[in-house]
Image (cartoon, rainbow, N blue to C red):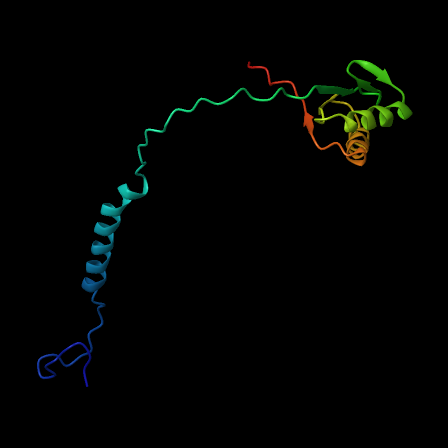
Length: 140
């Protein structure tokens, strides 16, 4: 029995070529479908949103500026603190309503251990808002 021919009297050997016409037909149909559907994926809905008059935002709580220099000295609003004073200041800040935001500035040469201890002490006292302050990169 010979493959690839309906009439075995005309073709005696097997057909060795792959018929790619059906595959090309399917690929062309898929290509047309993707071409037609592609603009739908990038279509943005134009909306005319209503304007609202909002009340003034509540006054932001006072921010506490904490700085750590390269030697590990902690400054509370530019006032140097001793190790035992930091816990007292953090406890008093945690009692205020609303809680102040802690803005932490650390020297580039500050050991990570000092920063981690300060973060742990703040968390231990119940302070939840901690912000790291950095200097913006200068444009060259």
